[in-house]
Amino acid sequence: MNAYITRLPVFDAAGNVFAYKVPYKTEENAAFEYVVPDAEETNKLFDFDVRRFVGKSRAFVHFTDEMLRARVPLFFSRDILAVCVYANQLEDAGIMNICRDFKERGFMIVLGDFEYSKAYDEIFGFADVVEIDFKKPRKAIEETAYVCRYANKLMLAANLENRDDYDYAKGLGCTFMQGFYFAKPEINPENGFQPLPVSISNAMQILSKKDAEIEEVVNALSVDSAVCQRLLRLINSVYFGFTTKISSINQAIVVLGLDYLREWIYLMAVQKLLNNDSPEATKMSLFMAKFCRKIALQIPEGAKKPESFYLMGLLSMVVFGGESVLTKTLDEFPLTFDIKKGLMRKGGLYSDVFEMALSYLLGDWEKFGEIAGSYNIGMKEISEDFVQCAEEVEQAKMN
Image (cartoon, rainbow, N blue to C red; front, side, top):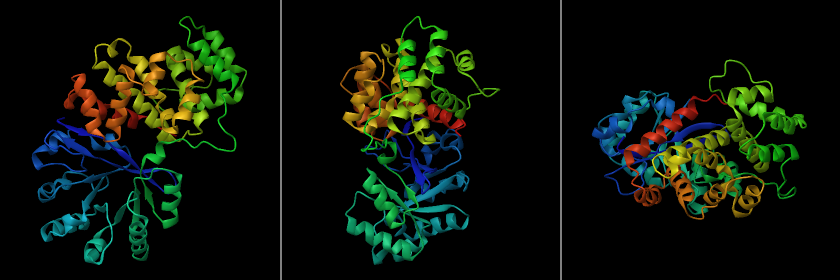
């Protein structure tokens, strides 16, 4: 695959993933864009099962004029694809007619990054969903939202950064939301930062030893039935081919082994500390774990300890809480210095791998390219790794 490709979740009002934006960039495109460059690249960009990439959600894809004229959206099911276009594209009568045909065929039409003006009345009326960039001035946001409400248009609030943005978008009546805010944990300022239960801390300390004994781990966890139930609920919430439900810590150790049990305990600990155990947060943690390991395997030094990079990625959620939350959280974990340094992004191989994984995931391919170039990591290999990791996570069955 000779292109970078990623996905950004779009949530509905209930907090469930409704769709994924699917941005990409080819070697010919210098800037990050939500576009596909030309018809000849279609098979290179979509040489995988899109349904496996986005799961049961839709794919929001922006197409160039050339791709629209080539009727590329018709290569996809209308149940999967939402055709995203910009207002200036629809000013072309030919493009408008093509998109009208897509709409008549049952495709959802998303008007991307839209700011209302009377000149766009016909174009505005054509859309099913209107995307509003919340980085724009509030006056522009509110004017566009007002017209959307009046015309009964569904609104997608894009680039939400914090809780204030989220509350503002809900107040304006936005149905769909997207942004970095959804990756951040909710820390209750009244309760402050709560330390981990003794049972979890003891289990992590035992599992950090090379000669950890199964009986010690079981004894450490068994004193806290609530923790045991939470851990088993987490393990059973992601289906990886278990033929029966895991009902005890002993069974979990037999099925997973101590190394994998350690990772699930660490993930549970992060969720508890950050008060975020949503299915999408779990999927993101699993994805970052897999992707960090894939990137590490492409680097000779990293390939020596790929599971250390997996663990680093699994704990990636702690990064989104800010420096204070990150420092306090890492103090709770018996991690190696390299993993802590990587999560704190203080330089070195672990930090570079984490930066590459996160910047690629967020579509910051310029930053990714700067680091990847120093390790001779190519576009084709990293894109295929990303798609494979996304497919594996989508195959997991989240409760």
